[in-house]
Length: 234
Image (cartoon, rainbow, N blue to C red; front, side, top):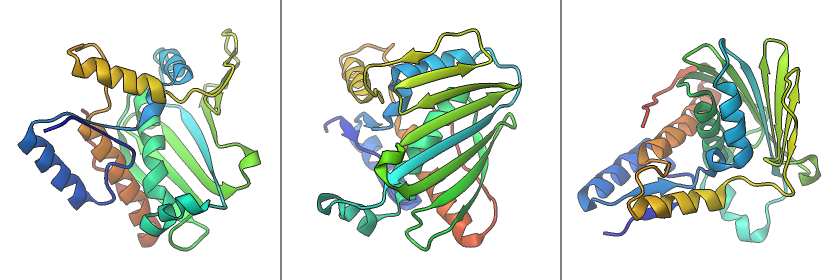
């Protein structure tokens, strides 16, 4: 009977999502998932800037995961593919930034299961295109870089610390350290539980969408074809 904060991913399969929905409904509790990047200050600044766009955009999201997994994290590759644990972050953030529904994904991997090096192309409902480049490399390369191309202009978000504008009149923004929104998400969820209806929250449906997307990426890799996406707005 307690409300729940669960780290991503919500689940590893569609059947697990169904079981979680039944349990949450039966016990009448609130559940949120740690998809925190939408709470990052630079992520919110990026979303506000893209509100004025009038046409589809191209996005490049490079996510680099350290190749050597420490002993305390060995379970990660034993339990699941990195696709399942990290691609949910990517699709949740980009669909939220664009305020569009992803409708199709085509993914390929240069490695064998559990697929640690992946390129995926996602088509959104407004014809915007997202390319995800997921690599396992030296962590000195950096972890996350997002670039948005819109009519000859570019916005680059690096490590959720730097927001750079090219071709825009806006001034670049640099934070003293990376801020991916973890603490803001926890604060918002707490305010929501205390009755603040204006506090934004990642919903159970958001967590399900992220899980099903990751499953579709793996399906596309194994079937070597594009896969339509099941996505419900929360």
